[in-house]
Length: 282
View 1 (cartoon, rainbow, N blue to C red):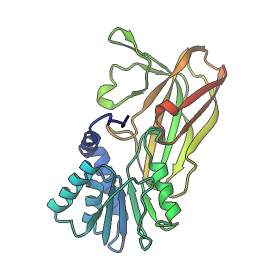
View 2 (cartoon, rainbow, N blue to C red):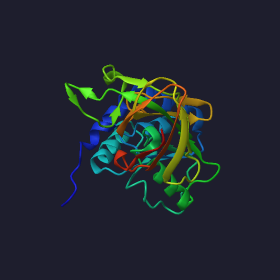
View 3 (cartoon, rainbow, N blue to C red):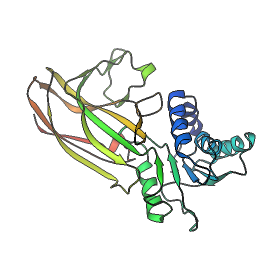
View 4 (cartoon, one colour):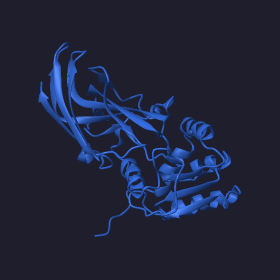
């Protein structure tokens, strides 16, 4: 049976476009980094806004890579409508496996296939593909450069509309007011993904975390911080790195001062169905 799309391809692209804090933060970083001699890659171009920022910032040449046929058509029209069709070249294909011309080299790579903890998106695989093909090197500047992910023990109220619904929840700012989450520990850094390097696509870590409040440990709370450049970072916005609570299979009563030891593992881009949380010590 042929797989069907789970949602409209254009929906998320449109949401990202109108997320002004996210878009303007990327524009600020691009304006600071891109120089007239630079060749830029915008991977996962979507609406084309990042490619347009790079072109407007004076890049010599911009390549915009997009997998979705309909989204790519929209981006191409955007490049033409804004008189950048000669400076921006659209490439169609999957960034994880796309084969680039052997004579290409990218001075700057803009890639905003980002989700909290890189659980849902394939940015790590797409970056690794660039390194494998040697179209980037140690002099290439990546925007963003780094993503840090933090974990905390949490007690989440999964009752909603009179029902118990234990599922992964993204706590977007304008939808999270009625989502009750109690932090039972401090946030602990669990990963730091440097996009300028080749990264292992499987993630695993064992943590021993001190409980700071009495409560029922029934979920983990994930949050990420994105460093667009060395000194310029952005936290969650409506479409970037929203905090996420992931339910556990069992509820555990915990007391202040005790320690919980857990193992968390998943494949980057594999989705929450492949994220495993194992309680080692309680």
